[in-house]
Image (cartoon, rainbow, N blue to C red; front, side):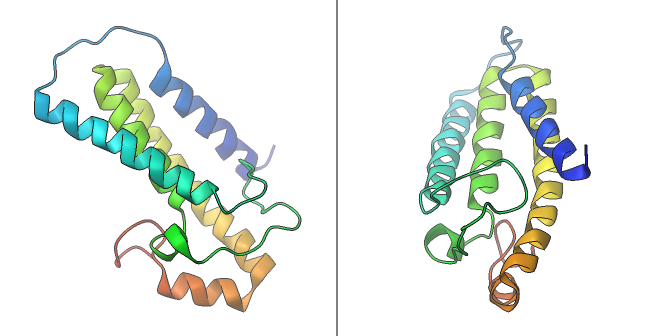
Length: 148
């Protein structure tokens, strides 16, 4: 099992940790509940918008055969809209779960997806060459201008 496969397994484990059954241990103020709900909805929408232009998605870091480079739509805001959406949505779910375990799992997922994105981007640069490098130079890895 190589590093990429370990990251895919770690991603699945972290997502399982966020959703693992259990009862909430504390209450949330209404504003925190609303903010967490907004993260779930907006993160889910961003992930779905990122998935929409692809004909075949895979959890692997190498793009599937026949994949094309997508640089428009939400891919004009971030090189990794699925990961950003998944991370945001997962943090929202973790807060709504009201326990430590899902918060720890969400933090782990954030680290895993950051590492996975770097491997995936190397594979995209190998596959698409200069077109990908030009795209990466003008589009942030996650969000904002400071993250390349």
